[in-house]
Image (cartoon, rainbow, N blue to C red):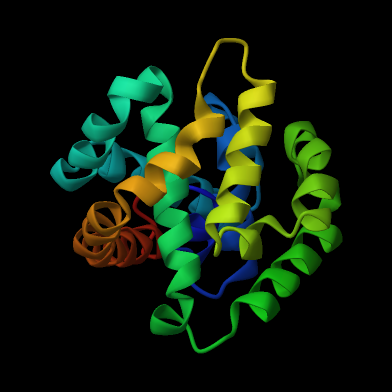
Length: 199
């Protein structure tokens, strides 16, 4: 999953949110160097990714994307799902998305001392572009994917992924709605396990 889903699935603990957010920049067992709650967030992130990568509904989404986007299909799938979460945010949270995003940007700013270098480099772009809110529109998704396409080493075709989203919008939305409740249940179960001290 992408940034917004990972944050939402972290619950309300800021340190767990932080760990979940930085997890892709934390390799191997270096997560053990972080405070306990941040560590839990990193492990939660890894479990969410594993569950998502191996889920049959997500595989349907990725299979539809592979013909045009090849190895970037999982990345695009994650961003599509963030789009639907942002669009229907009011169904999942009582906090409006703008306030939720703003609160998390504050969490990042006050925890700069423990952020990995990769996260620190990305932060200004994330906040200036208000990425978490921008996922709500297809235009925002297009900007994000086009930016990613420019930064890839290989031809990714991601700049055309918003067009694909529009072409099969109902199918992708249906897959998100089938999958996301299962992911929420998984994340809650893993969070409880981690809270009880089982790594």
